[in-house]
Amino acid sequence: KNFKIAAIKAAKALKKSGLFFLAINERLETNSAPSRPPPQPSDKKGRSYKVIMGQTMYSRPYSEREIRNAFLETEMKTIRIERETVESEAYGNYHSLLILMEKQ
Image (cartoon, rainbow, N blue to C red; front, side):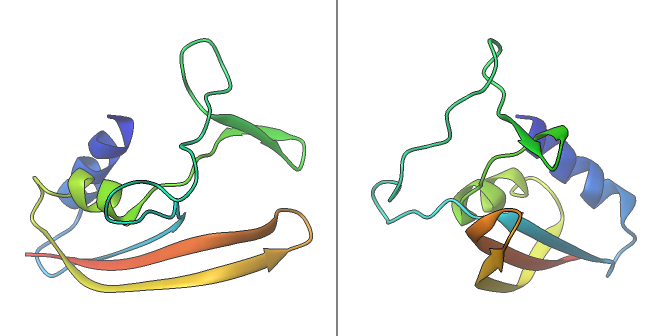
């Protein structure tokens, strides 16, 4: 729900033909089911918070389907989608989803 609200606000902030770049941790999915279980909430309200380098922040991976659904009701067109595996001493290995969109 909150991600959809953020998507709508991002689309509203852009002028026509404005570009939006999103880089986010990816939750891997197959066509029928996630390849790994959905993230477990870290607090009583079901939100996912992580402590990263001493800072508590909201952090959970999203699937391409979740991102597309969040932007479904906006005037955003997906231009390009890339994926990469990022290696980091601080965070380990994780999958990253990179999406470029344009406001129509």
